Length: 139
Image (cartoon, rainbow, N blue to C red; front, side, top):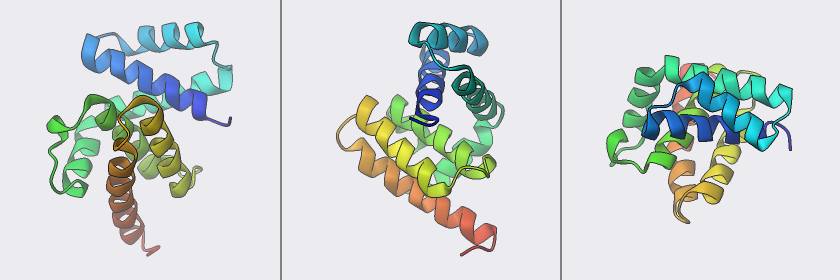
């Protein structure tokens, strides 16, 4: 399973924060307790939630640039949250291969969003990855 449970817990937490105004730490603890998440995955989820919330303007600006026809505000809530999580991973989690971050985001979209969301997420994140690899001089 790897870090998938941590990603799912982070997504559920960010959803509660975004729509319900929940306190991130409280929402994360409740989600992880309810789902019986392993402690390593809880730590990963906490890092994701904290990182996404701390870098929200930067992540949203990146999404604006890479999702040509979509404003971030117009995106479906779950799609926007999944994209933020994956962008954070791509930019700041150097121990996770970019392809893994994209694939995991697509899987989250298939599970929690609409049937078309996987393609949309893949397209936006591919643009993010191309831009990041070019910036890092790896493309």
